[in-house]
Length: 300
Image 1: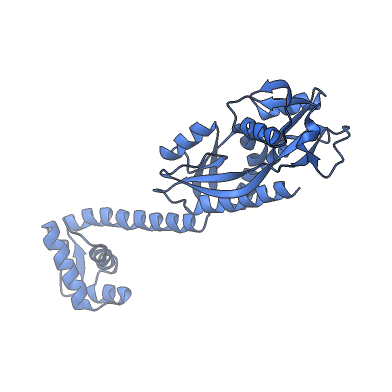
Image 2: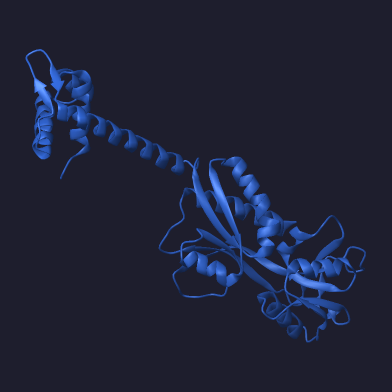
């Protein structure tokens, strides 16, 4: 069956006006063209839709039945178009974000709150998962975008750098190092180090820093979560080397974060998205908010 919107629009206009000439004026079209469109529609349906008299055009039983269906089709189409316009204008939509626990706990809540205040019609869903789970969520369309640090790869996932994040020294606020502009890695030689386990990519970067400075680390604790490392530092049990964005997890003024140099060790915080599913208006708006928030955090 090959019905066209033009035929349905013409049919509804004639049904409402009760006249081909009046309907043609409303549609701003020629009456012969409208009459032909209705004839084609009737031929396609195999029924007569109108009883035509010299004074008026009236719906047949089949015409009344088709009027109900045709009106619903046009109403549904108008709602669909309106919905697409609202989505394009970032007034409605759904966004699924996957991020590692630290970003999900301390960075993204504020970003999401600011974003939803600006776009209250867009619902954000957040998954706090590990790196491999983030990659899998992007590949299986369970997430629209992912955030974190990831190894380079030539696959179906596009990696967009957001900020360059440097490792910093986290120490108690009362430490002599807290007031410094910078601390060299070699100055950490005699300090008890609280580090993440080898399953973390941060641990590898920390080892690179100590090796480059030709200084062996004095490891006091190995933990899985960044928040645990910060709690141990806050308790005065040592210092930690963590990413810049870990500053978002510092409570009040209990800890200080100091840039490390000689060497400077940095990595990219990236946005992940599928090459086959470009982000929509909602995702693009969120990415803008996230980029600004990360830049503010890095500049603090």
